[in-house]
Image 1: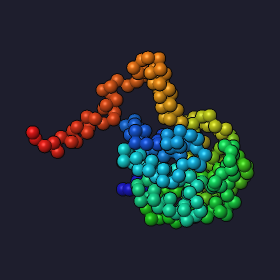
Image 2 (image 1 turned 60 degrees about the vertical axis):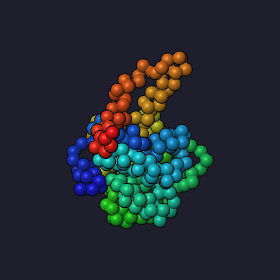
Image 3 (image 1 turned 90 degrees about the vertical axis):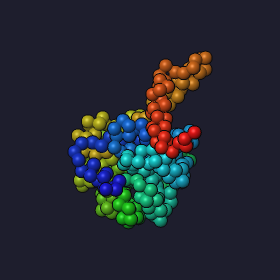
Image 4 (image 1 turned 180 degrees about the horizontal axis):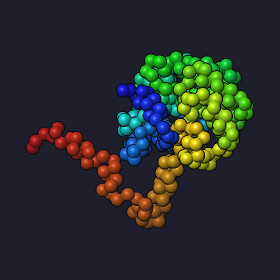
Length: 287
């Protein structure tokens, strides 16, 4: 069974799918070791890790695809939802993006309706006219037939065009055959319920990390509202940054490591030194 079919099977099971956001081999490996079957290759996390900067359309498709390959190699059984962003161009670029992720082994790919390049501000995401957005999703669904990869269609128009337009886009994306639906930045539970209803029984996706100007229900609340997938872009990234800051502060204070540092043996095991030695043993030339 390929990755898209395994994800379809998982989404048919009851309960909320808790999907950590990952950005490289180590984060993917740790999420898998913690028991998570799925992961979201998050554009915001990749921007933070590769650029040390914000998620403002500065990361290229090549950088995202390279990050996917690192994640997939480190955790090959993990069902990865790849952030395809706006598809990196027009409808034909969307098809190239979807096909590339499908051939590489992604279970699903996210395509959104924002305009790119975006205005030179971090505030708001102006979106494509409805019919242009429709054609991007149509192109994605058509390209997905090659590998079976699931298409997650996202609308970012709620903050700039209102909830009525956002719900209409969810309905339009369902008509075009999107497998998973995503209303970004709902204001409250009423808007969430409208978007979930507009998905007409198809899985709804939510960003559940706190801090942004959007409704962020708990996992239990999200499940009760009808969400099927919840992802957490800052769930590992923010604690990782906290840990790095603590390590730097310890060094600056003349210490060897932070009090939160892993014991050396545990770190070496996590990174795979013993597993490497075991795998390499049959190939050692006898002295």
